[in-house]
Length: 458
Ligand SMILES: Cc1cc2nc3c(=O)[nH]c(=O)nc-3n(C[C@H](O)[C@H](O)[C@H](O)COP(=O)(O)OP(=O)(O)OC[C@H]3O[C@@H](n4cnc5c(N)ncnc54)[C@H](O)[C@@H]3O)c2cc1C
Image (cartoon, rainbow, N blue to C red):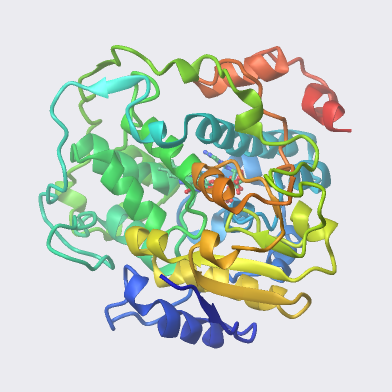
């Protein structure tokens, strides 16, 4: 299969949408002609928008309202995640640059640590994160069962595909609408939807995770799988118990407008699904025999089998790292840049048009300042015979491609804390391992002194 070179469009929303329909029509999951918009109304791709979101960040109500769901204007979640996901805002940068009242900043940094933990977890365990890692359900796996009142929403496809959430429930209607229209949800409503899917409906969490992944602009296997495993009760004995109580607390007034207000199916706490510890936990949860493989190089390094000292002639950027301070991009300011839309992968994932438009907008903006070549094919074909500089990405797909591409130089991933070889079986174990104390035993002291990682990072 040959790779096609695509002429990148102008950095304009409608041009980016046209680019997506023109080049990816057969690869998109939700292009059924009924879409009103092929891009998110809320999030625009590109470094400029990432910088704007960062400049407007206000942490003053963060702790109190970050879990607030509706009305939207009262939310205090930062909405930075699509830019974090695609490397336009790195975790070290957010850690060091974001300011705010000490307690709010502390809370915000804990959330950054969750992102870092998810990345360590996925970098080490890779595809094993699709299995139940610590707890498993007793009953047989249920696949693609329709919900009690099946209503397909925004998710088209063959008859084998699952419908979405029960839209008669106001809390599912509004959240699934946001997922499919904006490609984004606050963390609180992600938990509602995942718990409704996996705990109340008993559906397979992997199908729900795939559906989120296809639509969320920040969809990453690391944080998404971790979130679903936690919601489904596979990381501890306790799943996330979703009930009317959370809706009334986090979305005041929503239940009053719901058709099922007086016949609410989630009036009571759900039964806890019967789970048991997995028989033989994956040993990688507790020890990493190859921490340097997990973390990638600590210094720029070559993996080329021939002429490892040769100079690169092109920078390869990936979906993990599309920002201007991508280490390889920054280290080679004069080299042309290549981005490859991986056709076989896209054909499998069937991402939403909005996800693809977000990435195209980002590339189109980059093309205004760098020489950008966009390809549709495979990285192996697009980069064959070229001397490539790139940034390590802590995901299995990058490793697979890099083995074939053999980059001339691999730049280190911007970790907040380089992964260790210790216990990552839970966030608290991971935290204790790296920081030497549990989150809750931290001494009451000014924020910077509470966070040894900050000192390590200088
Ligand atoms: C079922 C489920 C699926 C999820 N899927 C994803 C996903 O695909 N991609 C993703 O980035 N996050 C995911 N999360 C985590 C979290 O919900 C989002 O990162 C967060 O809601 C993004 O909103 P924000 O930027 O306003 O976050 P804020 O609350 O403002 O937090 C700041 C940053 O910290 C990070 N962060 C916050 N909470 C978490 C968390 N629980 N896990 C990991 N990182 C976190 C994000 O990068 C976020 O941008 C998921 C959570 C659940 C329960």
